[in-house]
Length: 192
Image (tube, rainbow, N blue to C red; front, side, top):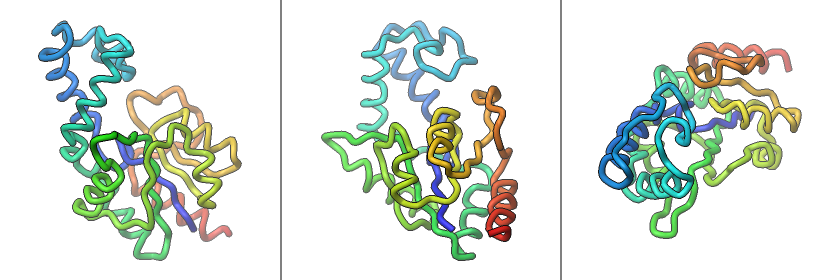
């Protein structure tokens, strides 16, 4: 069975790192107003930033390799290793975008490996992951993004949403941790 998995805020606790870096960026490179609404997920609502400033922030974030500061989320590493060792194929599919000055793919792969993740492949720059899941013949896809889950669902692929504070509106299958995800995947595989 092939499992496609998002990285940021699915298996890595990236939001904490992004928020810290965004406050630094806001203070030192933008207007220094801080949060517009800390409870929001989208940067246009969270900060007093334009689209250009948001784009510049993520360029700053990539160029300073701040993704590397994120740590594995909860029990993700433990249960993904169990799945891998049981013969499941793991594919990391991320929206992380390429950068002309950095090899984001190599940096991401090296980071995943150094933190202990085992996997078959990693792909970056996927603004919509449904087509990649279809091409790779993914059986189950896991993400924290409702729009990505819905895109993958549109290809008839089973999905599990990682439960977070910013995706509560989703009514489909969700899991609070990777132990739940592990149990769901094992159940689906046994039913095949």
